[in-house]
Image (tube, rainbow, N blue to C red; front, side, top):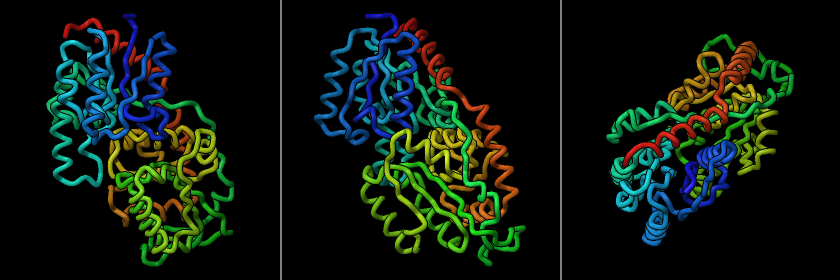
Length: 377
């Protein structure tokens, strides 16, 4: 076996368009560029709720690996199969890649969340090292009994990107705010320019699209259009519920559900937007926010995962999760205060220069893997 070989176990299709799978792809490409031989093994797509055949397939795959092999398992699968990996904990150099704890997913029944939390705790006890994408996730894993020295933070990187080029009319006033929003220093109507809002997130409960739509509904007198980029098919019930909400609120003409798009189309959306909005209820890191900042887009989001550290105090506004009123006030300020938009855009342009790069992330992972190979079981 090569001294620089890694077996990478991923549930489902590695090409799936989500931040987590994108992170996995970049790690694989980066390690290969550094001379590592990375073998990707696809597990059943049913994780983190695997069937018995899915668990049997995972067990057979692990059994076939050579003694001493470095094995990195995406947490979407690892946390749901503790009994499968525990027999190999001494034989293989097992690593976990935890994007965020499975039990933290929004919308789980309490019993299901408890079961996932217990399973993931047992699984994490069986690995030699745990990789996480943010300090917030590292802190969360303390409750799972994982010692801090067994956890390494590998923040997602970003690629250099051109600054967004929104319509210059976006610097003009966007209309009078609804009267019930208070007496703040909001500007008066301008020439009717439309501000382009962008949200990039799969339509699942955790991402908070429902909160965003509720916040925007009273702002119909203002000039804005929202484009939501993200899968409409991964959670059919949530997508149907959100479509019904848009109809109920009268926003079908103001909100475009664009679905999944390829990298070039996503770059086009980021390049032409004025503001990025992600009212997420929970994140492990916030890769979509980092990508928006890489384009110099100001952000309105929530202080979860690594988001607060990404935008700091100058590149955006933070509101509590699940607070449509606070989100509405933040949106109104950005829509109606041109000077605030300019200040936040300058802050985002500065923040993009401080973002981590993928090369550094992958070099750090390479060091961790080499150290792991030298450690006894």
